[in-house]
Image (cartoon, rainbow, N blue to C red):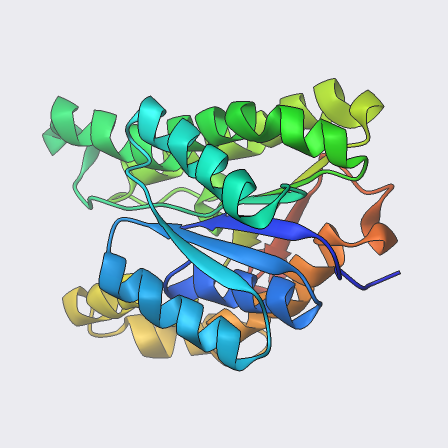
Length: 252
């Protein structure tokens, strides 16, 4: 029930960090995987990594802020891999600034990348997910979907929106056999958080002290949850928000 053999997954922002961890999880469970991202060189490196695992994998260039590019991404995936069973909306970015100083153009960029792209990709994928008979959408939220931080006003708003998008589409698409769930990553060791650690010298020690698991998460921590939510074992799980944070969000 955990096998993804014969199924096809598409991962936006899948060429690094958490996205690549999610893609590896699908690939290790037997799925063919399309890696979608803007950077062709990073896409190719991620595809090579998945192919080294024995998976079928392709790269698709996409700008997730452009609706036509998102539709072309889905169309190319289906044309090259024959179907689409699993959509992982992982593409995201952040611009850190206090609310009173936030520029409108930055607000629009963060929301377009993190939230609107997930809605548009889900719409484009919907007919294929419905046709598969066991469609899966895995959205990537954040612990800032539920917490507030002063420098993350647009990021937090966008990721809170991803949770509500997940719940609404889960209810709408459950009769079509499609499940929709969202992950809430905690402090994960990625390029994005390494920048934060440079800006905040105490952050590394603070995170380890505050996290019950006493470590930062890694992209590999997302392999299992991706494979599980995409599998038949999770067929009756939908509309859920699942922290992947080493206990950070439940620590008193």
